[in-house]
Length: 264
Ligand code: IPD
Image (cartoon, rainbow, N blue to C red; front, side, top):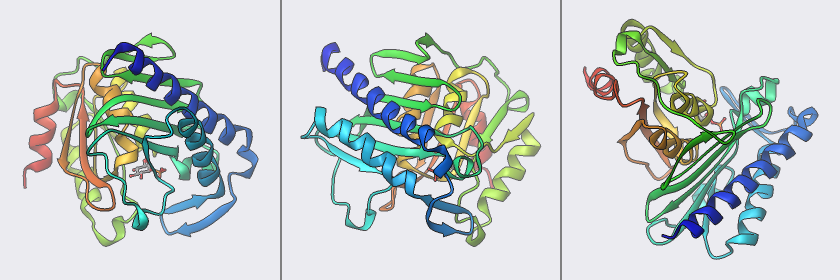
């Protein structure tokens, strides 16, 4: 791929993420307009409206590319990333934070080619943070290069994680939380996986793990971690609902964290 086409992908991804994120911020007073509530999750009208905004930017520039969005009807999804470009959009990652007014939420736009991430943008409008990376350019926050931390012992690390929204039926995330708590300096659950992963990229924490995360949560931020010098791994590949088990680290504690997570 030429540099020109990478720059056109990242420009479009930035524009799509900013369009959706600015729309969400401008409509912050509508953050409690709910489409559907669940015990540990919520679907907002603004999730859907922001996805429409992001997709319209992408469609205008790349009408032939396939797009997977969190708000799609996934039962009807037949698109495939096997050949060609796929855009993967999470219009508001950290929806529960957003609906309560917490500022940690973001819009994530990833571009994949033949199953590999080639461009990624995570935009957190309420925090004024724009994270970007392409496969041939380093990770940046607000146009300044970022790098993972140099912590090299799991015992000295901060690991972020997420508590799966369906955890009632499987206590695994809580067992993992306990295991991490005993073996690290601190565990944090902030509530916006894409933004959390960018903190690994920025060196503010040292790793992230979630046993049942969605492809749209990691599609952009995973590349940002890698291009900041970190490592990522899908411990379980995405299932039909696009859920996977995922770890990202600064690289130095990668094997220690995976060994801990996979040890019985
Ligand atoms: C969720 C958040 C949360 C993570 C969940 C995600 P959403 O995304 O990123 O931190 O633990 O697995 O699904 O629903 O707010 O877009």
